[in-house]
Image 1: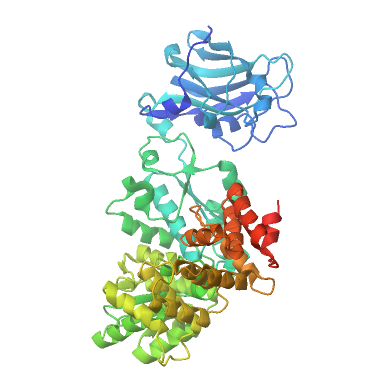
Image 2: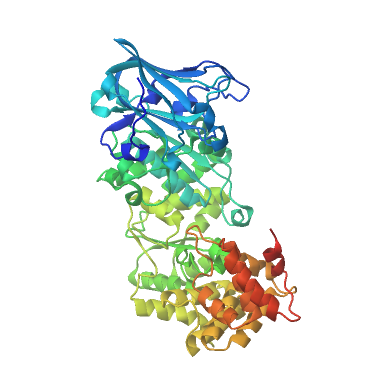
Length: 615
């Protein structure tokens, strides 16, 4: 028969209840292979590989592709996606689709029709319901001497028409694949394990390398130096393998499907409730602990986990863990970003918590990366240093990280910022957490942060200048400020710059504060100090070109001030805005501000110009 009428779109099929893709359960074959073919070439069409074409026959007069089921199936639709590259799609313009039924061979489609791919919402959808039970589907291309190559083929049936074992034959892969810190990675791994258990599915994970500028602050080793060989053999996928699978995003709608059109799903480190609330129940908390115990680390790290379980906390009833963090947030590049600061605990708040715990006689266990500050708190307030336990065992950085996670999980309460490291401990220990920035009332919290910039206050040398400048900036965040808009906060900002003179972000904030105070010329002088050849212009360029994962500029809240000064003809502000706009992918706006800079720069030169001039 000829099917030349209007057919439904694939996007419309997605909304039909109980419609499932069973193509993966059948065996595919094709008329020939070619030099462009891949391993399991025909089967790739129903698996769903992320390539221009899934299979590729040789050049023939009438190449074909076929799919055979083990048993008769009541089918609803077959959906064909053409090759992704449009200029090769003409080879599939004239197709015949035949089905083999108990009544014999029936032609369900024979037409000349252009069609594309799901992304363009013009895949070819062919109804099959009227043909009854089907054993085999064959697609033939009438090329007159050419190949058949398609990028994806789906065969839909109703879940209610399928035997129970058909729904269970291809459990989806639930994949975690992070490239950030140890805690965030393990959170994603646990999410994937819990979801795979509950869905059910097959847990898999990747372990992407960190960028070098971040790795120096984290104890993240390669997968083979972290997990046992047996664990890797069962569950590990390379990044290349994960990319080829093209995993879909896991959602609540996906978890309610009786079977899955997409056979792999990517989960993140975010709370399970935000990814698939329908899987969260009273057993979820215990599931995290169970899954963590099932992770097999190398013996070197298993020793650290064992030691954490053996630490005697019997005399620390009612203990609280205080996760201070530090690392790249206080000492590294993240201190120059204006956000993420709430992952770490400011020293002035930590000291107040330690003093209050001592007064109450409540044990406090300290965790973090600033060993000098931890030693100070332990000595002055009688707190327990987790670092000292690790040092007794001569742990390396990776061992201490796992030791800290496991020991923290044994405390009765965890006081921590939004760090994934501490959050992981909350998950596996079933422990409630409290932010140090909500531990006291808002006015007291702000006063403690502002005190970090007070004049004439004796500070123990184990509290570093960067700890103090970090706390001062948190006063800005706590008070909802992005600039210094009062004399008091101008003084605090000047103190932060004095304590951390290499922090170009603070200087940009200073410039924006001056613009707000209607002193744009002075602001431009501050900006010039950041962008001249002799200045730390590379740091400035990194800040101006920084784009967060949500697509916003690293200086998003400061941009309006800089644009205001640039519009008034101040060249350093114009250059700064031009660089930001280019980084955000707005070349026309970047060109407009670059023109202002060129017209007003005079004798000013800056290495930042090279970024603007680069193609």
